[in-house]
Image (cartoon, rainbow over all chains, first blue to last red; front, side, top):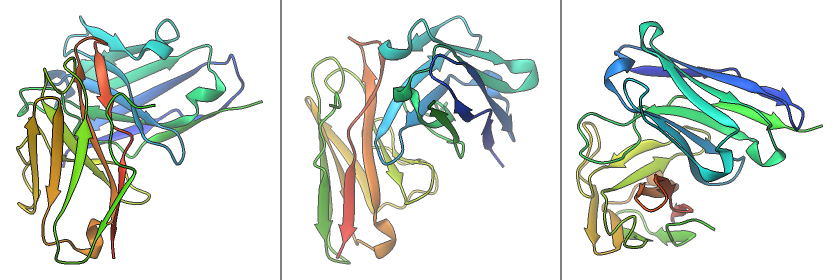
Length: 121
Length: 110
């Protein structure tokens, strides 16, 4: 069974840091573009970052550029999101997902269950 | 303010058909494939439609997608109470070099 499980969320003060992890099982993460999407409680979806299979290309939402870093360890079948200088507006559920191989474009599939990041003093 | 524009809500009776629109621009929908997502209450989203009009394995053919110019539409036929959910469109924006979603549409099956 294809599964993605996020971890690392929690309560952090403004200006603090967190590192999210996403563990893949049932498939090899190395063949996929990987995606982070977030959703503030009660709000809509917001794309955060993309990373290519070998990590050579990365794209970020403007509001997180310079603060967030997406990375991957294909040997560990894992994806990461290092979040620094956190702000209240970063409070959200963070989902990891794949860009499906069967798509010719950008799409988001195999969503994890999400991990909640709360930025508050 | 989302880059893609969707109606906040739509409603229809069980068994009926509903459509949800998604409006964008030449840098996103006009240039790239559109996908659609269903988010049932308290769950993660799931992919319903990709590449404008294709369904992943396991998605019923009651769900359909189309695209024309800078707009896209999700259609759902034979509405069931279990279809009550939030629906989002998404695509890549070549000008922003990033993914973009619509604000979401809440479907109520009366």
